[in-house]
Image (cartoon, rainbow, N blue to C red):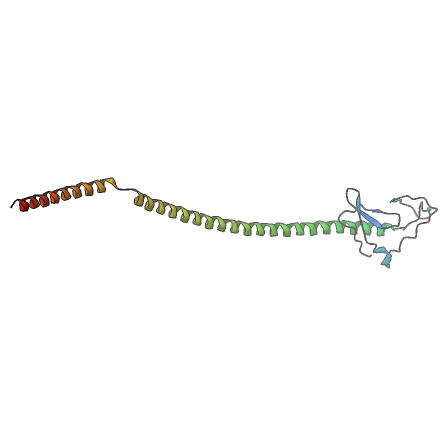
Length: 184
């Protein structure tokens, strides 16, 4: 029997031209390719008779010798079972394919997430080192600035007092020497 491609769910219908339609979502139907028209085992459906009433997608079981209630393609019980089995197989095949694709997407997404996490960690580490270096430089410069701006009053007081005492003593000696020299 020719392979039928009916998508993931066996619940399909036929339009007025006899083309199989797969319900997808929200009243949207997917056109199912007609393999039967090219198959040796299943004949193409007969063209629709304009005088015949439209029965939509109807399934009517009939027995041998009974008149068919509408035009269409007659399937034997074995052919019907094969079509149903083929549709179920396609449904399982589709589920497996979807499962495989989902697993591939999950692996790809997980790998991408890990890659981004490594990049993020590297950026955090780099930024942390830059911030630490900046903070260390600021602290060093603050200490240098404090040393340059702090007049160290004890040292200046000691130097000023000592220098003033020495200058006073030298001036006294010089004046005393000048006075004694002038008096002579």
